[in-house]
Image (cartoon, rainbow, N blue to C red; front, top):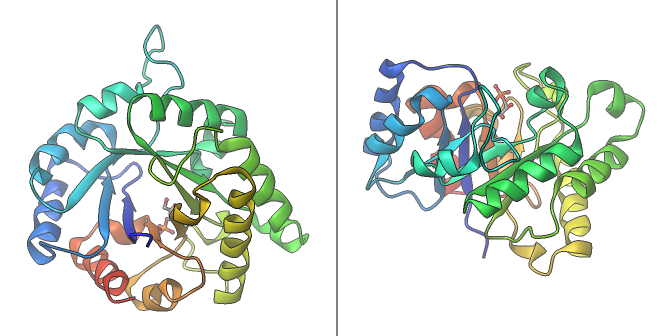
Length: 247
Ligand code: 13P
C-alpha cells in the first residue's frame, strides 16, 4: 500500500553537464513501479525539472527557509522551489544540522513552510556514531522525530529518512537488524501521532549502493532509500531503482 521511493540527494555536486544523467536515468527506466526523486543543487533545479518533464523523475530541493519570503539573503523559500518545478524538499539533513546548526524546531518550521507551499517534506533523522555506541540511538531518533515532524504531517506530505550520520559517505552501513529496529520504532512512534502513519514512507540513507540495495529493501518497514554518492551516476542510481522495483 506504500509506493516505494528512490530518492537521490546530489548535495553540493553537479554542473549543467550533469543533467545528462537525468535523461539517461529516464531513458533506462521509463516506467518504474517506484517513485523516483532527484534533488540537485538549487542552481540546477529549474533546468532539471524542465528536462524531467513528462518522465518518471520528480525533482526536489535540498533545503528551504521557514518563512514565505523576505530579507534573507542567500536563502530559498519553499514556494520558490515549487515555482522552479520541485515537488519535494529534503529537510534536516545531518549535514545541515551539523554545518548550519539546524535544530529540530527549525526543521519543523521548515517542514510547515514546505507543506504550506504544497511540497512533500523529506525529513531526515539519524544518530551519530557516539550516540549509537552509547546505546542512545532510539532516544535520539525519537526526540528528533517528535521535534522535527509537524502536527500537520500526513502520509501524502511527509517522508521520513533514517540516515545514521556515521553511515553517510563512509561505505559503512548498519546491520539489517539495526535498520529494522529503527524503522519499526519510527513506524510505531508515528502511529502515536499521525492517523495515517501506516502510509508514511520510511527511507533508509547512508552508503546505499547497487550491491547492498536489495538486502536493505527487503528489510522491515524500509520503503526506499535516500541515496547520496550513488545517485550522481544514472547507472548506479538506476541499479538501485531496479532493486527497489523488484523488492
Ligand atoms: P551517501 O549515499 O553518499 O552515503 O549519502 C547518504 C545521504 O546523506 C543522502 O542524503
